[in-house]
Length: 259
Image (cartoon, rainbow, N blue to C red; front, side, top):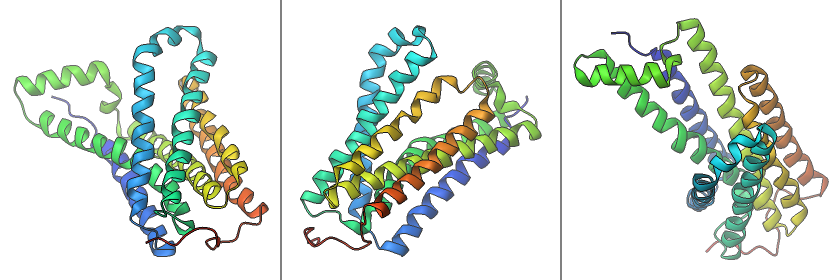
């Protein structure tokens, strides 16, 4: 019996390594508070829960309306729930002196961590390893798993060259996701800390990147390149907008020290 191509395991492993390294980097550079883990998880988990609550009863009504309508549907949810809640949770934390300036980059990176590492890559790694182990054996479970995978995910049985290409695009997709989460998470916390709502308004349109999701199948490689470009641009905008507004890389006087 043919097994899945183990090359696909590389994608979640690399994504997990990147996400963990990014958090370690900001801890060494900023010595961010451990509260960042909790509040970034809260912002992300609540947002995803609300998106599921909206999509389960309504996505069927929109899916037949065309790519543009579906793109607006996804994009607005990301704007309202993911970016909006990143700001709401940041406001809650700062008002209670649970986060400050040194947590800004880590807050955005935390949002990226929960999305790309905990929610997607860890689960993906577990599934892929389980599939590989099951298909390495024999019996009814192996037969059932093989039949299900060949019908639902035939690309898992791709050749090495094809698998490497798919893994490369998958890693690029996760990097793009990380960059965009970092950008809007950073801006949301900075907006609260420095009381500059314009930074929040700059972050809001970044959620519209999910408008492109329905168009992914037209040209997957072009899609990933465009999304990466927009995500990288968002990081630049986040950095430049804070610099342009003359925000110093120290905590403002009006922000209380953490207790």
